[in-house]
Image (cartoon, rainbow, N blue to C red):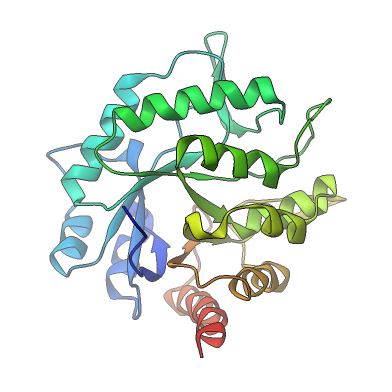
Length: 272
């Protein structure tokens, strides 16, 4: 695939806001959590959106591609089957691990940025790619800690991952903000170092600060600082798509529409 088609501005589809997503103006595409869908019995709301011609992109949370254990091919095959069921142009997961030693963390754990860890990630990504019917995009995650003895910055780590696997990138600017706040990373340097020509689309989400820790909750309003990072990214590249994530504490339709409008204003400003 030479490039990603223009997706526009979208929102994460969740069963709790299915009617909201259906009636919101200006939703150009949606993203679904692949593990929550059952092949052969898609939610009526997702089918309605497909019938309208709205692209539906499956987003996985359980492949654990950064883990030392072998890739669970059943999970990969399910992701691929969801992609085929909704006619998706690509699928995505995260640069993380969620399982180790038979235990499931229930959380997206950051991968140590060492060359050994990168070799494992590359091998797992290649395995997933061989068993998927469409291209794979991988997302940067929020972290509350840095693994010791890192050999690469996050941007360098992702750049080499792309070079070695030809995967796409799903850049989450809310996670960039969270990492800058919590572990002192530099979002500008990250954007300098990643291959923006391999950008599939962008995530935007809200969070809240408790004490001196910023929590990437997906349950609060998007902060102006996160929109500023989106603006910075858009000054460097026209993202194929930008998607709002909301996973809890759902606000009114009006508030969601306002957040989507704020995102679109940033994107459109850079395209004018």
